[in-house]
Structures are given as C-alpha cells and as structure tokens.
Length: 151
Image 1: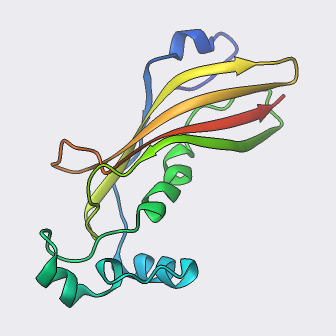
Image 2 (image 1 turned 60 degrees about the horizontal axis):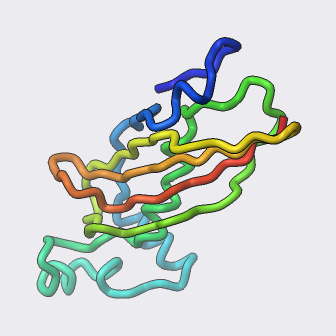
C-alpha cells in the first residue's frame, strides 16, 4: 500500500500497484439484500437450487453492480493527498464484468494508480481496480475509478 507524505510525488506512483485489499466474502445474505434494494431479483442471484442446477458454477452469483460497489471497501486504505479537505467520487470508466463472481468466494481488489490531473485547488486521481477471486487468474471485474480531491 502506498502512503502519501510530504516527499511523495504522484509521478512516482503512476503505473504502479499501490494497494491490494484483504480478502473478503460477499455472502448470500448480502446478495439477497442487494437484490431487494436494487429490484434485481434474477434467479441467478437469489435462487440457490435453480442456480445450482442450471449454471455451470455451483450456486448463485453476485450481482455485477454489488461487486463494483465494493470499490469503496477496497479503496479505504489507498492514498489520500495530505492536504485534501474532501474526497469525492468523480466517476467510473471502462467497467467490465469479465467472469462470474460466485457467492461465498474469497474476493479482493488490486489497485493501480493510472494517472492524475491537477489544478490549483483540486486533483483527480485515476485508479484502475481489478477484482480477483482466490485461486482464479481471470478477474471478475475491472474498472477505472476516478476520485477528485479538493485541496
């Protein structure tokens, strides 16, 4: 994990992996709550019996948007410019759900600092995040996450 201090330059971090989150699990209860809240109760997410019978994987799969929402969990320990007053979500680019994310598997995020754009009173930092399952080489989700820091 990269920590900012007064001598750290963002140029030194561009293109580098700056954080790997701890492993965590999205369980069926979380999926069911997300399904209810988002009104996306498709059987592949909430019907364990049918999903076990009809999907190639055993069991239900996590909603892509629920997986994506775990960005904030993975970004909690990522760098923050020391003089920033506020951190704001600026946007997401190139979001892809590249493989199923089975419920109950170990998941983590790998964060790379892609680039940054600075202005007098703010800076936008572009992060690339890749969500990976334990013992699987293909990520389940990749996205570019843009955070604006107000200085």
